[in-house]
Image 1 (cartoon, rainbow, N blue to C red):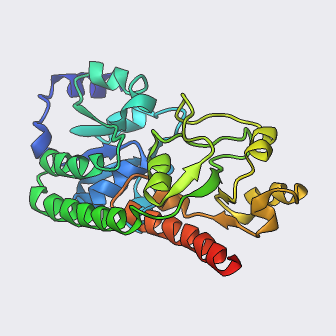
Image 2 (cartoon, rainbow, N blue to C red):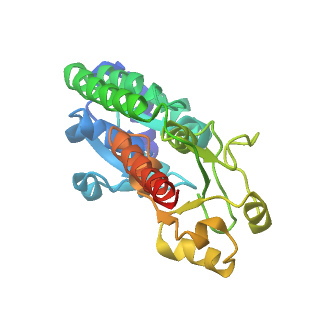
Length: 271
């Protein structure tokens, strides 16, 4: 182990554009790398990276709590890409060893196209990254145009059950809701992912409640006075496309928009 550490310190760091052995530390990073054609250069991933299927065959060297530093070093990466806000402290020892580390932290829906181009430069896949970025921008623009005048739908976006959490308008999910014409009850929260209680949801009385699966929605049936329960508007969402900021995200947004369209259609019939 000591010899390996010494070797890694002495080897000159490769320029990012020449990276051939890449470690991805977040699912959205892994998916982006594969989407731009750099999948064969990925030698290790975090345990949550399950898309595309080829990523599941790679060594798992991290989770959301920690990184297996010894396993990382054994893979001899020439580039590590990490989620900055969540993992900068975890990768600090690797930075000190001289291993190149790049960070991914897209905050707005439009940021992803720039992220794709940057990953293309880091990996030598600029042309394919450009194509993927253009396709992403086109799909996002089409959705915005379609729903720019959509009637608002009051909703609660349930991000987590215990503790009960949602997302503000400053998150990817919150921006997706707004694009679709959704009026989230937590949009104005000063924190990105507010923790709330059931009483808050009851007081706001949304027309729609969204959650990751049916079991996560079951609790709300205990309050039949809720508009979302009365109108049978408890919807599930595709968390893989909405909670991972990737080229598949427009597809997740389109699915969310279609669910809100069902609510609008129900209103029209009722009137």
